[in-house]
Image 1 (tube, rainbow, N blue to C red):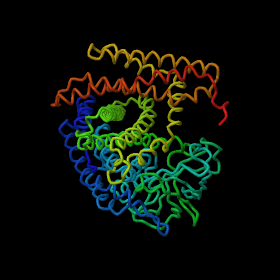
Image 2 (image 1 turned 120 degrees about the vertical axis):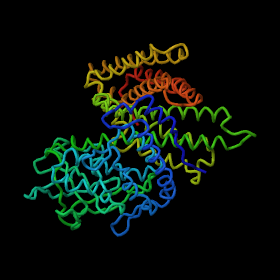
Image 3 (image 1 turned 90 degrees about the vertical axis):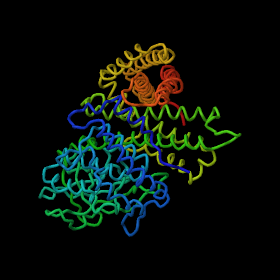
Image 4 (image 1 turned 30 degrees about the horizontal axis):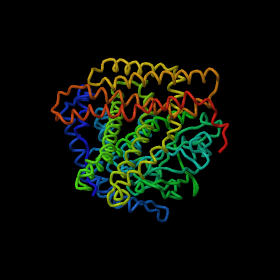
Length: 564
């Protein structure tokens, strides 16, 4: 049966040997301090959150008389998650937080999301909403709402999507009419709102995109509003219901314990909201939360993939067929080694990008965010599928807990901007609009690293050199399309360009891991496995770039001209 297991050695290697987060002196934390945080957080997740994973999936959420009820088992630890200070980890001290390196906080988030993705969405979306309020709201709104969100009495959400405005957010129809007292009357219906209503919190603080009377059509006319489910009095006590009603919950393929709600604002009376940021800057303001959510999606794929791999590894080490453990059958060993290499690669990518926040490298964060979101959700799902395959028929059954990874992972490719939108963002904005400046800098570093590889990695060096060459040719093809204004040909290839870029970046990171001489006490077999990860990743994943490059360079047909 399923048991919780995390590769703590690899996490410590990433944080303290490769990224060296202990050198971020502004936090005043030694390596042992950070390791202590990891130990205690991991203990809480293992003992409290993970045991809720399967029962909460089976119970799901309930919508009764307009109220939404989370699984009962969440109430057993939800309050202590806040009281133990885990929600405040990584938040500023001035609002009651505990500042730590971003990569450390992200590693802890991976524990949470991996152990129970559906539960983790509640506090993590609340955290994202809190950060928008902290950075963009008026002082009055900050003072009124942040304390209740910090202590866990109130949760937070973001409300973008409408029935006719999914990826096309600019088509939204929700309105915000000034009341003349600084507040606005909000009216509209939002769908697919994660944690839109739940009895885990006394109040829900919604960040809602809506259009004021002067707002033009499209995204340029959208503003952002803070809309509490229950009005808050000046003394911070709860007042009257604000006519925010959950009119439906979705019945989904996965994340059953996460309440995905249809929310009606102002359907049963006046619904008050307050402007956050400047009028008409709603999209830019909301993107603070959106970008955070996209990185969280990457963690969702990474953490689900890593835990699914651990499930599969333990099962394969115990399951006997043909008089030996199935881990010793070549096809099973192949699946496990591939899964380990790509899962550790995802972890390396996520933690590397998290660490860039402490280096204040906004350009590289912007370049790699769509890769984190898309690549990790794509590969995290595939690792979960392979984990089911390793389990055989038992993997298809609920009691082994591995099929849940598949169901819970699919959504990561869809929400917070589909992976197709992420690929378009990477190619059109982060590469073409930027004239490739940030990309060239990254490729230069990968090229220099490739030159440094010794004879032990001569085969991988050749693979990297070839991959860099094919990537350069693809960029030449894309530039030709830009010059000829053949934008459909660019757009239909964005996903493949994203995957090629991802393979290069992850191979580079795993290669740097393989070349790192640790100061800490890491077993010899673990260090050998790091070299194997790099070799296997180049063999099974980076090698795919040749085929992707051929597809991009050889196909000159506009797919929109073809008939379905």
